[in-house]
Length: 71
Image (tube, rainbow, N blue to C red; front, side, top):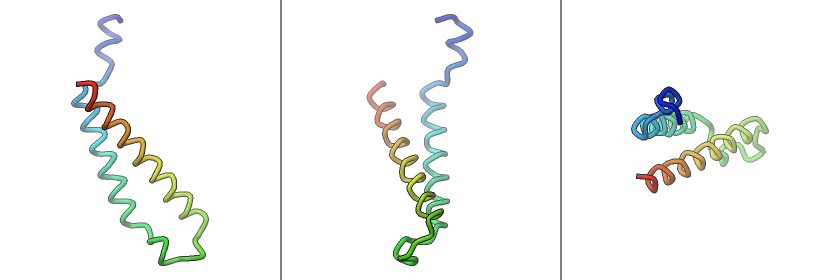
């Protein structure tokens, strides 16, 4: 890999910091959503939003585990 291509890649620390920010944003915005038990009929858009957030959280966890094993 060329030096310029290599320097364009984020460092592990930069990845960890970005991942931490992502997790904080997901937690903050997830806390603002109504709990599913509060709306048993459920709004489809809110259901999809919750599902998307859950998938992003799963991916963040997967990336965190991957970073931890690549030390």
